[in-house]
Image (cartoon, rainbow, N blue to C red; front, side, top):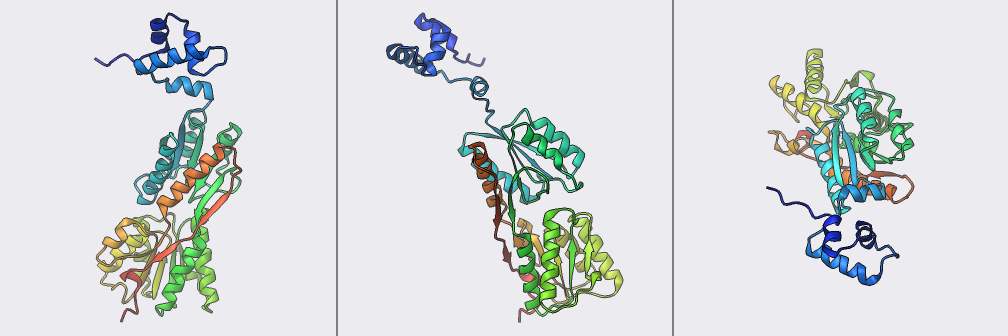
Length: 338
């Protein structure tokens, strides 16, 4: 049988004083004498009294909980970012409530409204299937600060923590150009989402700055950056009968799907097609042909989003933070490795 938790009623009964006196003494109220405060604290320690978190939260107006909304926890990027958020929250004595939108705007909006009365703040990476995330402003209007990381949205009252997607794409394309590639395709994500539109822009500008006339047939906009979309892209390329020198993928999972399809068709990587992904998922280095990829520093992004949230809760103004990416070069893109 569980041991009964000590309450202020137990302390009051032990000392023969009122419950209100115990409550005031433990709150260091000036109406209680120093001598009585000392006696009450001694008995509280003797009885192993700890204040109820519910009672403390009611008094302070804080719930000591941060809500986190991500598209899914089955991606290493998001699970690593959540770890960063949780580590920061733990240091501050806060819990984390994790919710998945599964890239559904309807589901995300329902989560946003449900969190308003449960958490002190919300850290989120927005769902991909909508162009209007203004329902996040419901939180701001309710006094709940918002921090968006990785995927952000215009018109949302929030601080932001992102990686420089444009620069990451430019680094990837410059590397492929140095490998002697000129016919470089880009398998892009949905362009209404900031991360994928910035990666496409980085690709376009870098190709054009290199003096390469950009053929629009080099760009394939997918509905997502999943493995299946990568496979579909690869099958389209194979059926066209014309192979690119290289492909820059907007995500590692689509790069993985394409690599599997190319290899199944007997196309050698990187000898015939050099490949670079984006995210630096853990599986990249475990493939038979390790995948070059742009590292987004997901843990760091989550930790910084957590820090920004606590700055917001302390009254600091919202800001935007941009993290510098790093290109991790592996065998899949080393076409000129001789």
